[in-house]
Amino acid sequence: MARKIPSLRVLVVDDEPLIRWSLTEALRDCGHRVSEAADASTALAAAATPPRGFDVVLLDFRLPDSNDLALFRALRRLMPRAQIILMTAYGTSELFEEALDLGAFTVVSKPFELGAVADLVLQAAASTPSL
Image (cartoon, rainbow, N blue to C red):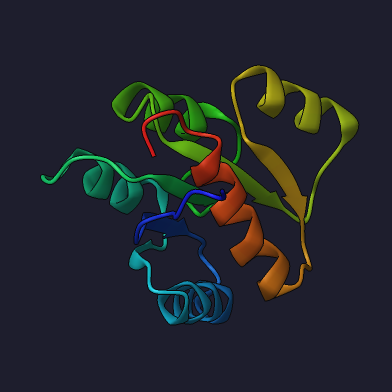
């Protein structure tokens, strides 16, 4: 019997307003509670604000105030149980490998299909032992 995934808390971090809006709407249509951040400082503030933590984070690699994996590491420290899906249009095999070594659920290359990302969010949440 497949287990039911509850409504998830998802943080969408992307500096492109259209991408952020599209992901947010698609995930809300699936019944998830979604917060948005356009930059690293807003993402960190969201992660540290009660109720603390998200189930899944969709994280853009390049942001106005972050263009390396430092934000990934900071979010991992703040939310060690969250599943992080890294999104990038600038992926290299080295970036993919490093992100996965740091504990990324997966790395998604832009552009991507919204439905595929919504499915990845469910897969990520299902792989978390507490859900």
